[in-house]
Length: 274
Image 1 (cartoon, rainbow, N blue to C red):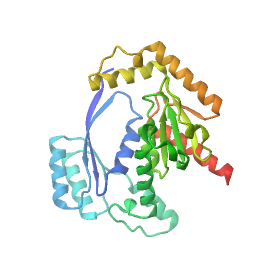
Image 2: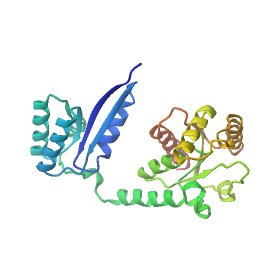
Image 3: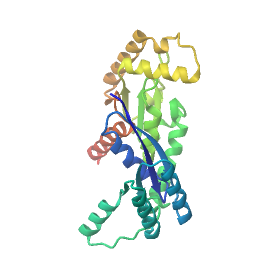
Image 4: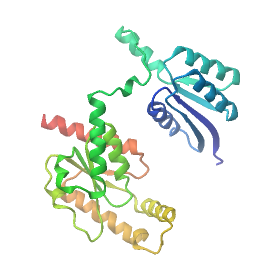
């Protein structure tokens, strides 16, 4: 089946994280769709809106936005209407419904969801923790983690940890390397939730092969040998079972889906210990 291509313009008066996540969550519902993404963030002036309009003229497509300034909203919407391209304010239906339900006044402000409050600094601290505990580093302080992710190479450990950090969790990841013992701090940890990630060996081989090619490295290696990789995955699963660690199969799962499952396990664990 031939893929359909379109231009997607994401407009935000803040970091663009919200509109990007909504776009991604929506697009995964469709097969054989390819998009060229145009990101316009920190939009705070009419001159920036006019630049966006010129960009839409050059590459007509679907426009998603989060803007709170009425003049800029009207300028963007009216211009898109003239260009006959769809222009959707993604937060309006939810904010309007909440305001009606809560009988509360809406106090709109650009980037309000990103204010530098205690939660913001908690996320920054969590991100520093992730970076300093990536790929088996700083094992002496593993027990300070909220979550420890364990897995063989290329099972999305690092991006999952970064996603969890954005939710305020201190996450560390420890790789399972054939022939190398796992750090004793991992095996002795009591406080963190330890989660094992696994993947289908065939998909893992392809992911690793693509990685080697992107680095221009030799492909004659056990790293992508199907039998070796299959054995590696089986041994990792045996480890998870022996330690009683929950296992998540990341095959055909997005980082968001894997992280949501880990958050669910983490919250359930908190409830059990409260």
